[in-house]
Image (tube, rainbow, N blue to C red; front, side, top):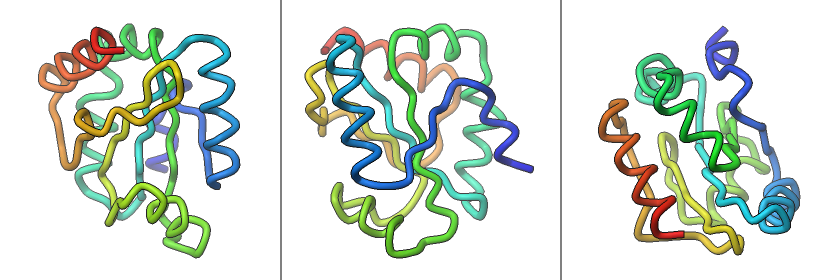
Length: 129
């Protein structure tokens, strides 16, 4: 049921190959990428879904990035490979990639962020791109 809360903003990626493909497409379109690591059992992830991502200001900002989501609920081999590639221990973690497809490591978010704080962070990512 939590998956329904994502709305149309997120495009799901499950594998490193899918992520690489989406990064390449975003780069071709000159768009930065936001990658949200999510799991159904992650309380803070669900709080972000409910309180942060649905806010109109956030939705507007999502228009300037390609929002992707890796659902690692199953914590299977594929999920772990994707998390290991970026050194992610588990959700919630949000990574940002510039319009050239390079991760902006200094802008990583781990844990819960409310709408105001998240919007401010997303604006600084867009300014830095």
